[in-house]
Length: 358
Image (spheres, rainbow, N blue to C red):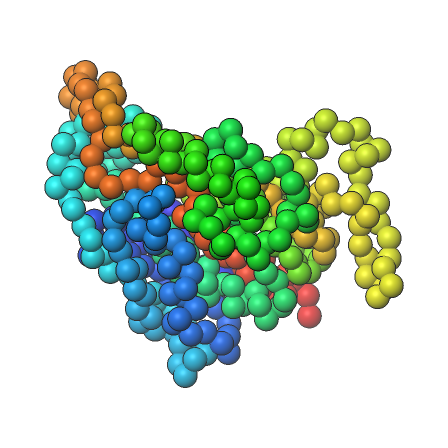
């Protein structure tokens, strides 16, 4: 399945070392203000080579808007976005043409399709996520019309963890450092941890926290398309994601129900609110008007520039050393991907909610 969404629906295409990658967006309403610069700005946050903490692959990730806009506004027709691949070194992957890299998709793609594009992982490469980020920038403009904003930041790298709630942080500082952590002391320790992994030719994982503010009540489609369920589906589809927790998550299991319940009240403006938000902005799978927040766990990057034992496609035991240009930690570049998938989910659920009643 290369498509995601119901009313606001995307289909991505392309491979890591093919001509390029792209996305078709179906269902974006007409009249949404949209400039190429907005999409490009989102892609610039995800692109490789943006700092010495990331892969040195140099891709400008220049987006070409091929259809669906006119005079700075969407037309309601399919939007086509294309990003050419420029800095390909396919020869870096010739040594794995018949080898199965540990914790990669090489074996599973082979067993599923009977063939695979081994150049950078082909379709299984995280390069595909650039198309999602481009689509997310369009979804962000739809959300802006409703006053919804999505932000994500790195809250853990390895054992270095930022334990403060997003409510106590200045999220305007997310872009103030290469790690994309809004707390300077923690950011420095996280950067140090990533550099240690680089020096050891190893990799490190971590956690990204996301929050959506301004989400109106009523988003989510019972029973199977609950807000947390669709969001979990979206975020678990990102490369290297191994876990998702919504609201209080696993920590919430340690509280008694008397403390975990979110009591309702009516504020001065007559709006229904809750005094706490352990639910993460959703009850019964439907948004309640509070902030939607969650955490996403990323595993360490699977490609190591050190010797590992594995097998080839003939079942023979071999030794393999990774080559090419790879991130020691995906977290800094994954922040805009987490934001994009959240934006896509919320834009789709907003349009679906509007279609549910006159």
